[in-house]
Length: 239
Ligand code: GTP
Image (cartoon, rainbow, N blue to C red; front, side, top):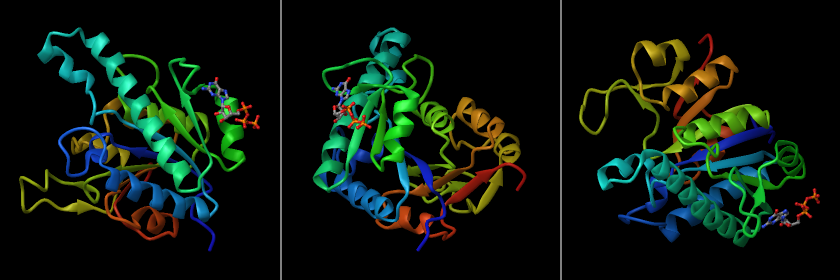
């Protein structure tokens, strides 16, 4: 079966990696992600991944601990490198070929991010993990995911979260919250929906890059999307 997309950027949240734990990486969760990614890879899809770092450190925590915001953001970027290294190892244990590229140079542990090299890796069916965000403070990993998706010409951002899409209100707080099947970027602004931060949403809109928000913690969901099933919420221009 032909996949719906040829090249995707998968955004994984750092917090989701914690699974049932309070901190760090849950081996069961990361193994589930690896099997799902393997299924996607086996369909012939080229996969780039951006992973967050919130399970280890969040830049925004910094101000509560008296650490400078910019310093905290860099600490958060390093957390994404740790997650990227973990994911690389687990993906390789599941039989995939990977390359880890960092926006901040750390030659001993990963390649520096070079756009043309990243594209070459994807063309050679390697899974490319982009670490260290954009390499700049004040940008989230969602923005990094968007930027890298545009740079490597991915057709879509698949934002794997713990919820099964975008709701009219927080479904954990409001039982009458409804899930949207699809939305335009305009609606994301007008309804003040928190899909990704506004920098990321605007980059997607201006570059005509659709986003699918879906529950990555449910095994098989990634494959369902690639098979063309409508799960999660699709955000795109001109719905
Ligand atoms: P091709 O040139 O397309 O064959 O790509 P390649 O990635 O196989 O070639 P390369 O010789 O660049 O890389 C071989 C291995 O070294 C891969 O596992 C890379 O991830 C790794 N590697 C390449 N450059 C760096 C680097 O700057 N730092 C680190 N730590 N590893 C690197």
